Image: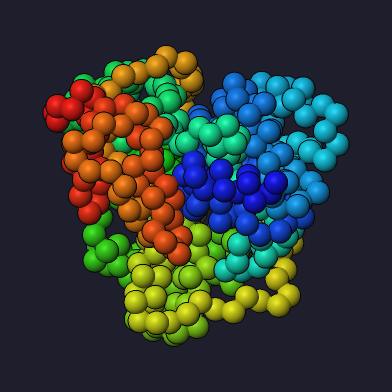
Length: 445
């Protein structure tokens, strides 16, 4: 039975709905003692999971049951924040009588949704530095992923994704759209007609990347897009060159160590001290042991967006160092033994409201209600790599008719990957090395 569940998840092309998009059939292949549902949705402004836990609570819990079965875990934990009151009330009804599933209330702090943090808070289990939750006997998955896992058991593949369209938009909204529509089309649903004078963040304001092409397709792992004035610091800072970032660090870092003292991974006992990395950059003293700490950075953005009083970018420095070190064959540090949680950790949590204020986002911290309206689109572009692993291999040809849900690209043999399915009915207009284009009616726009 467990293998049948896994095969259906694989067939349906389920990946982590958010983050890097790791294939779920692989993630759930190991044995665990506990499965944790990450319902924190700790990135400010995004409103997907907190609403899905209300309208799709039964499917989410059923998806959790499937995850428990295939991993042989004895306990399921739904971790979410106290402010998601409607979700808590709904879930309490759904899990009534299910003694193997419990709800854990997280503090409204950032980054409560970092899987290392979520797992420690809800179960007391510590993920080893550089490791994954499975190393601590756990699997952490998110809300939409579990809904997709439930759908997969009914033969329904992943063809749509939920997005919060927010920021400086006329009508902040959370919508369900076909995978492969353009970001421009998604923003149109929020009433946006022009992008002149604005910048876009793909994802949350803390970890999301700048998006320069509004005609880029929406992928399975997308969770939302934020429109902000182009002079907003969250846009302007993301457009800085590495040269400028390095020069600022060399001239302005005062070694106050706030970036280290508030680092979520440092507080969990990981060997990461961003102020020392910044010091190495400042004085061009690149001790290998110090710069290898960069591998431990989760890139949560706390140091860059909140902690640094000079507005410097330790997160970006760490990300750049990781790429450089990896390309030169340098490996991460061995995890500390023992790994000890900082004694002052609980007093160094950053409240989300305080973070929103610091980010200058209070104006945009509004509701983005989930609509049940269905939208029709005439064209989708399905990238062959929407997930961790190898690009999917097309199984269709130009001119072929497809129905929504049909398989259009499969996992390469003996490789990590995910299947891709048609997200609209129509005709295959183009098949390339990077994407499949489907048009409704067969006329390419």
